[in-house]
Image (tube, rainbow, N blue to C red):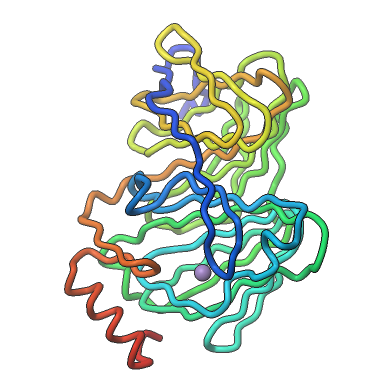
Length: 293
Ligand code: MN
């Protein structure tokens, strides 16, 4: 089998929509930039939420996220700077440090807290929510935790690089594979450090939703013979095609998120994301009576 791909001949996935992230407060007064969510903002199957926390001011994050429940999806936390302590209803604990990732499958239920472990300094991180198909929503909860050194760094040439959290990043004839595997939406999660210079082409399967979130600098996305800009704290939604071509307008950092849409009805109520209203009512009733977990 010829595994080499000539990315020049593949159709480029254009930037179809640009959405500004919104300042919101969640948990105990934590200030967040939110760019995907149910309700006021839009979700992009299977991505239900994307939050960025970035502050040098402890008042913006010190309250953290005291005990709260989840059912029916996965929460993925990625820290760039600072640390968060995770503790759940079973007494499981995990300390998430700079560069570390926690991929939590809430399944039928988790009650947990996520608390910053610092009283000063910079905290910078992301949380995404990825939906689960109906068949997996009531599975037992599970955790995958990765230390920074378990996340491979792909060298992309020209001073650019990417940390590959999930999925496969194809570089020339080589591929760098992230540690997160066996997720049914087959996510790609790359943290890309893009230097100005030649455009970067990344093949992303055409049947996957593709989102880009710039958290530093600004980029341009090749879009139908044109280039469309995507700036800091904006979310870009890509259209059909097999390869995305991006170019840094200055030293830039961005998240690339891709995954297979689930295509099932989504009914949510805060931290519960199910397929029907009855299932949400069941989740609320289970939580109130202590039977969520
Ligand atoms: Mn949580």
